[in-house]
Image (cartoon, rainbow, N blue to C red; front, side, top):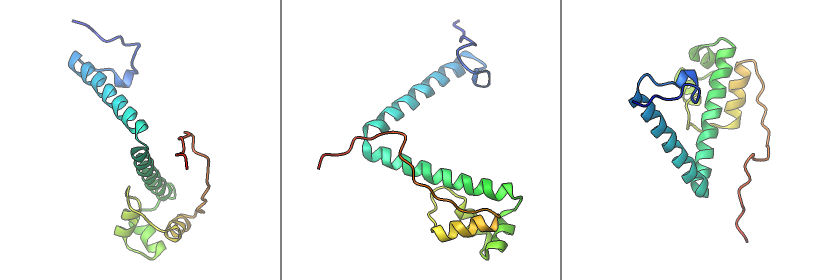
Length: 128
């Protein structure tokens, strides 16, 4: 029976048996196909970037709350809102206003800073 080369994959990702190893390879192939499909379709690329941004914002909000040692309930009291509203702010895909984000940051003792950066990937623009 073939065994995977232990040096080719990180220790935490090493499979316990051959079938697990094969699944890991199939999963990597699937991710590659998805990445290729996304890269080939500008609309899909834009959707993936938007979803990624939503997830990053949600994670940053949760990190900010936890770094100042507050529960969602405690933060809600500081913001003058409800705990479910704070949970929605920390959920991916929930859209909120800049004012609400600034209030969230202030309640955590932080300051909301927004910056605009050039994208790391250059997408071709459509001719006019």
